[in-house]
Length: 118
Image 1: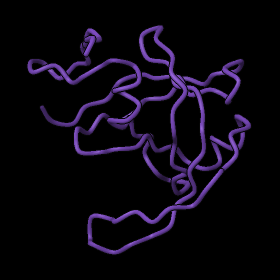
Image 2: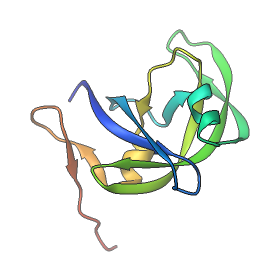
Image 3: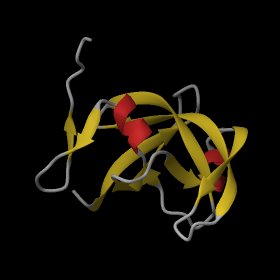
């Protein structure tokens, strides 16, 4: 399924102000990540710090907060990681699930996943 980019909007926690950004979609990423300065400018505040394992196996604490994300006119309140200043914005699986979106099996695109009753 791979790695590709989509345009998303990240907003303040109340969903009143949004900024469009290109986000990397990587099916192996759990959380959405954005540079800390962008999140602070939108009024997103960190709520907790949590350890994350990096690609090299090391552990590092990152702040987590709550914000609004829009993709193709769908909006969700989601957790976001306050990344380093040069971090690429990343659209994570947790946010995709909240938006009821998945990575399509063909042509690197997001597709709608209908909700199912249990």
